[in-house]
Image 1 (cartoon, rainbow, N blue to C red):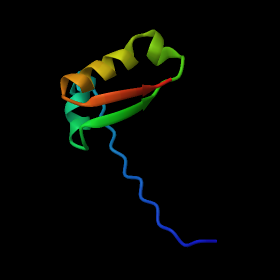
Image 2: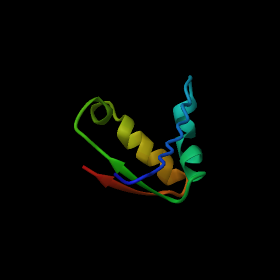
Image 3: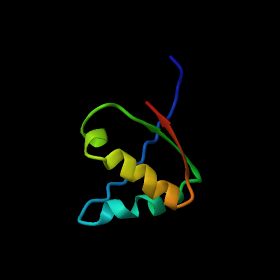
Image 4: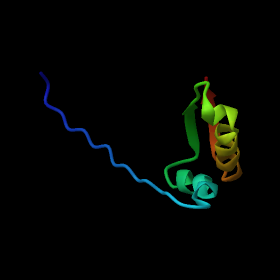
Length: 66
C-alpha cells in the first residue's frame, strides 16, 4: 500500500439569496468549470441551467458533461 495524504476542504454557503453569488464564489478558484449533469430535480426545476448562467456571467467557461 502506498502512503498518501488526502485533503478535501469543504465550504457550505447557505441562506436566502446565496445561490445568486455562485459565479463570484466559483471565480475565486479559476476561470473554467466542469459540471457533471444527471437527469433529476436540478435539471427539471432549472437550477442546473441557472447555475451555468451565473458562472458564465462571472466569466467562467463551463463545460457540461451529461
